[in-house]
Image 1: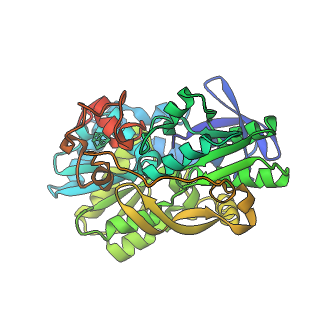
Image 2: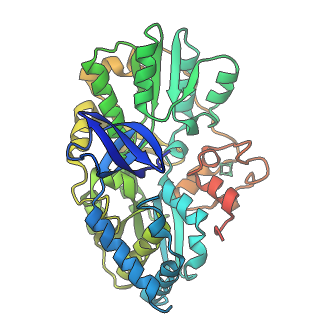
Image 3: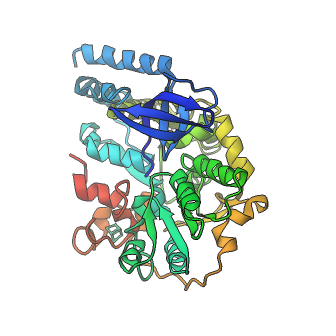
Length: 73
Length: 364
Ligand code: SF4
C-alpha cells in the first residue's frame, strides 16, 4: 500500500489536478506540493502528490549508473 | 515508465554488486531495510543473490498492514457492523485476520466494506451517500498521513458531517530508535524508507547516527537505488562512520516536505502506539487533535470491542523486528499461505512472509 510512482502533472486547478503515467490519467490532490506546475513530475501516493521530483538530481543518479554500466566489470 | 525503467540496468547492478564487495572488504554486516516496499523490491529483483555473503539484508517493521495490531482490525469489524456505517479501506487490509473474522468475511456477510485507493475516495463516498457514515481506515506511515490530514481538512472546509477516520497512524523514527536501542537486534546500518523520508526528511534520522552510532542511508525503490544505498552503507560500516546520507536525492530533501509536515501537525498530535509483535512504542503514533474530534471514529462512533486474540504459532512480531525469519515459523507455507494467511505478514504484498512465499528465501 506504500507504493508511490512518478507521474507527470498534466493539469492543475488549485488543490487538485490530473497526472499521467503510461497513458493512464488520474485525479490527484495537490495540497502537499504548492510549487508543482504542469509538466513537472510528481511522486504520487494514495491519490496525493507527495513531492515534486527533482529532475536534476535524477539525471545525476542516472549519469552515475550509466557510467557504471559502461565500465567493464 | 520514466524515472523507473532507467534505474534497472543489469550491467550497472553487476558493477554495484562488485563495488559493495570491495567496500565491505570482508566485514560482516547486518543491514536492515526498514520499509516493506524495499523488502518487496529486494525479493522481486533477487538483490540478495547479488550481495556478497558477508552483507546481510534483514527486513524491518515497515509494512503498515503488518504492524497494525489485531485489536485495530477488531475495532474496524465492530464499526462495519453498525447500522448505517460504510467502512472504506486500502485493499491490503481486507484479508488481514482479526481475532475472530476479517473485513473480507464481513463483506461477504453483507456489511458495507469498500476498497479505496485514496482517502479522497472516502471523502467522495461520504458526499455521495449523505445517509451513511463513512469511516476511512487510517493506517500507514508518514507517506500516507499527510493525505489523510488533507482529507480531514477538506471535509472540515466543506462541512461534510459523515466522514470519519479510525486513526492507527504510525511514525517511523521512534520505532527505529526502539530497534536501535534493543541489544537483541544488532543492526549495523539502516536502509531508511524513501517515501517516508520524502515527508519527514533525512534529518529525522540524525539521532540514530549520532546517539546510536548506526549509519543511515535513505534509499529509493528501484534495484539500482537499493544497491547504491547498500554500497554507501557498506562503506560507512567498513570505515566505522555513522552518518545520514541520501541516495534517493530526486525525491528526498534533508528537511522533507514542509507543507505536508505542517498539515499533519495541524490535524494530528503525537501519541503512543501499539505495534504488532513489538508492543507500545512511546510517541510512535498520531491521534486526531481535539479541534477535529468530530472526524475521529474512535471518539464519535461507540462500539464495544472484545479483547484481541493473537493467532497461535505466528511469529510475525519477531519477523518484524528482524530477529527471526519466516523460515523459522512452523506455519509458513503449510497452514499459512497468501491464499490462507494466518498472520498479517503473509497478507500484504509488502509483508516479509508474503515476499518469501512468492520469491523464495533469498529472492534468488
Ligand atoms: S508465516 Fe504466517 S503464521 Fe508464520 S510468521 Fe508469517 S504470517 Fe505469521
